[in-house]
Image 1 (spheres, rainbow, N blue to C red):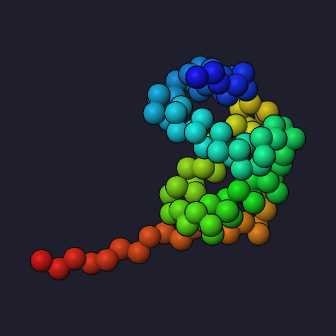
Image 2: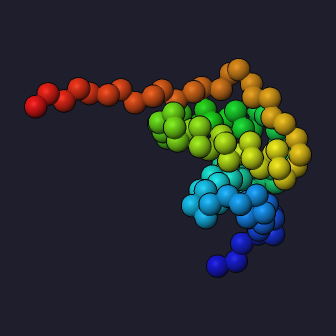
Length: 107
């Protein structure tokens, strides 16, 4: 299975910074999903609005937990910060996922 040169460059940066293999796999997965969500547009052509739309989609349509949404956000922020050397300022209209409620168990 061939991967894109863009994803390979991210993999190289992750290894240079000594991230774990599992973190590398997870970050690449979320970045790939972000690109596919935006109809395979290159991330350098996208900005805060596309990131906000993707995070809102995860919270509303996919109903992911807050930790999953935060992991997706961290991987996208890593990409913009270390690959494009650009800081993201997220918009306030992003719908944040809610933390799961804990059900008390009584034995």
